[in-house]
Amino acid sequence: MQSYDELLKRGMAQVPEKTKADDRFEVPKAHVMRAGLKTIVTNFNEIVTALRRKPDHLLKFLLKELATKYEWSGNQLIFQGKFPPELIDKKIDLYVKTYVVCPECKKPDSKIIREGIHSFLKCEACGAKHVISKV
Ligand SMILES: [Zn+2]
Image (tube, rainbow, N blue to C red; front, side, top):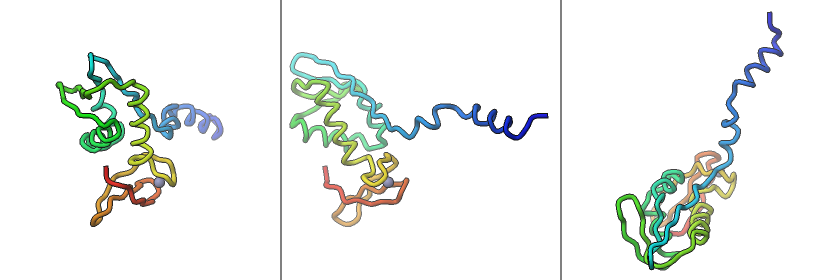
């Protein structure tokens, strides 16, 4: 017969490592290709899915930050102009800090809600609600 301690140890060993790692929220890095005077982001959909935001929202933010125009080519987002990948990652980080991660508990489990003329970042983890500016 196994002791309670042994059972406990076995039970804990069966918990996959990943459960712990889930606390850390990883934003996918932008996959960026250059094509002449254009900059192509090949994994925009993946990024936006990971952030659980509407593609239009992130896109509008990036267009404003980069002060550029865009076009779609299949799943690829093409910006007009030459932008280094680091810059695009930096802008996405800024977006995450402003529109995804809760300022209170630093978790990304949030959604954007509208109340009257204001938009709020509502955290589903701790319930905090913060006014955010429109994109
Ligand atoms: Zn929170």
